[in-house]
Length: 317
Image 1 (cartoon, helix red, strand yellow):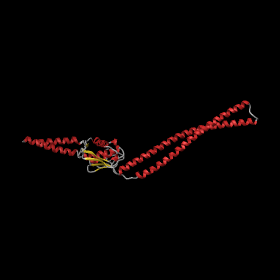
Image 2: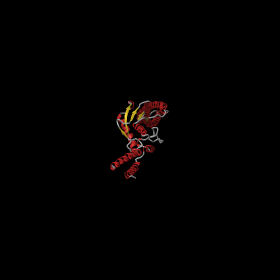
Image 3: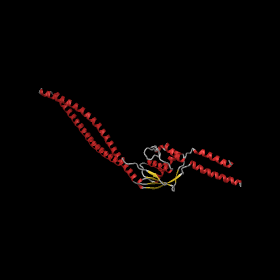
């Protein structure tokens, strides 16, 4: 009978110690199982993509705490739903607007670059044209003066007359070249004028769109991108996959019963904006977690206390 009594006592101590160990080290009821619920088609995200984002959000917490906190289960307790409403609609409209603005700005930059190239070409042609014109006018002035002088004398000798004819032909060729350069200059100027008009039109369109964007979106109030309530995570709005992962990580934190952090870079800050996914958990996130869920550093001490409790029970101390 004594042996049976001792075994039953040990079993009772183990049960009691195990329960104490659980409550001391795992205040959070973990691991929490989660599943994908409804995904509105407007989000344009597949089940697998949503699951991958959740997996990354899960890893962010588990890598940062060295704890097994979450697990995917098709029948999991926490359901994640993607709910489409005005928040995502406005976000999509804003994204489309920003894309249009970026396109207009890119077109303006392209026009500006083309205009600057034409301006360089114009300046080179203009400099060459001016130099050639000055040289032509000096030669023409000298030619006309010489012709006038020989005419005053009653005519030029045969050899001088031949030279003057050659000079006249050279001047004619140079005049033709100057006309060609002038036409090229006019062509460049016309292109520059066309680009200038196009650039001004793009700038006008951009400014108009920018004003409309500011009126519609810049003065809007903050809204919730997601929430956690009654074992359900609702995702309402995200722009990129990284932002979705951050929102999911934030709501998983609430599933762990964590409150909001005061640091803007923390995952548990009340709004998204300055968080960096690659940086993982911040110190304020870890402080919130350890306050709610304990730390793995408590394990060796808990085991020591449990062993001492078992030894005392077995020895009757």
